[in-house]
Image 1: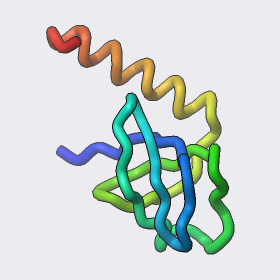
Image 2 (image 1 turned 90 degrees about the horizontal axis):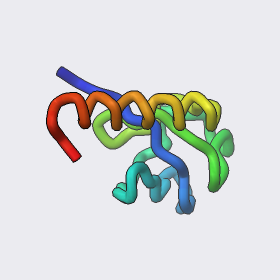
Image 3 (image 1 turned 30 degrees about the vertical axis):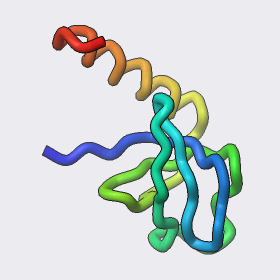
Image 4 (image 1 turned 45 degrees about the vertical axis):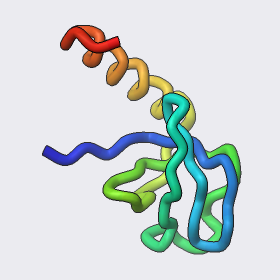
Length: 77
């Protein structure tokens, strides 16, 4: 199963972004999005290292909440 995760853009370097979710930072490619369409602070959906779309902050936060609940329900921390 594949899962795309919302992440917040922390910094940009050309077509690469440093993104964060749940305290984890990853380098993410922006090549699948229009140039200049993402700024630091924006939220993007990340799938296998690529940002595939932008998303509103409330949607990202809601998704994080659901993922946290699912993790806790499965006995995670």
